[in-house]
Amino acid sequence: MFRDFQSRNIIVNNDEVYFIDFQGGMQGGLSYDVASLLWQAKAELPIEWKEKLLDYYIQEVQQLLPTPIDIVQFKKQYHGFVLLRLLQVLGAYGFRGLFERKAHFLTSIPLGLNNLKNFLQVYKLDKDTPVFAGILDWMVGDEVIQRFVPPIADERTPLVITINSFSYKKGLPKDDSENGGGFIFDMRGILNPGRFDEYKKLSGLDKPVQDFLEQRTKMNTFLNSVWDLIDITVENYLTRDFESLQINFGCTGGQHRSVFAAEQTARHLKNKYKVKVDLTHTNRTYWVK
Image (tube, rainbow, N blue to C red; front, top):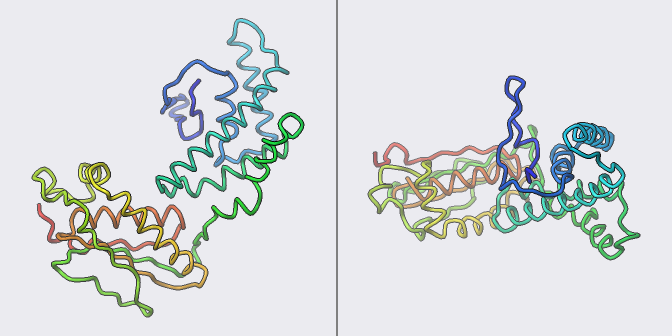
């Protein structure tokens, strides 16, 4: 088994096909990989395509194996592997999105639930496992799915979010917008990488500093709390057609902690809300080099 056989892990270059990210490939059910590929949530392949491609897959596999496949039995097992894969993917989306707060995975949860919903509309489970089927039906109900669907900006959305990193030695960033307000977060409670010689001439844009902040400080916990706060305001402003919101991150030198926090927050908001972001590192001219 490839174990994560999906389009993002397949490269086609000059008519040659390459696979990446095997996730510890191992022996296992022949159906699992084709289930992973055809029922990838973001691909949203039509049911007719899935059936045609499954038949093609079986046809090609028949030529590779020493004994013929029992096609009826294979398809019966295949549907079980599809369900297993869909639930596994939802578990990954939930953990990476709800616990690790990765916006990419948060926004993938509705896609995963709708994918499961499409499967249950075609393949009924209530005769064999009625209680399990009832739980799955509840999971894919509109009320549950809507909990994970944030408002999404488009080209007509007026809101622009200004994000600044700054140095407290130089003062707070100005806000020239009509409504003013917004957020200022003090990053000085996070251990400063700039105290260590190997990081002094680097910034929050550099991977060694990013690794330091993620692995040796409480930065992730801090940012998760920040995002809990600002997401409330962003969602409200999107529904009310507000035009501006400013979010500022300050530290001593405006070079390490505040820069990392500003970059990660910009990425979070773009991934989750597709909103326009204007990101500036206001103290960049004075960074230690």
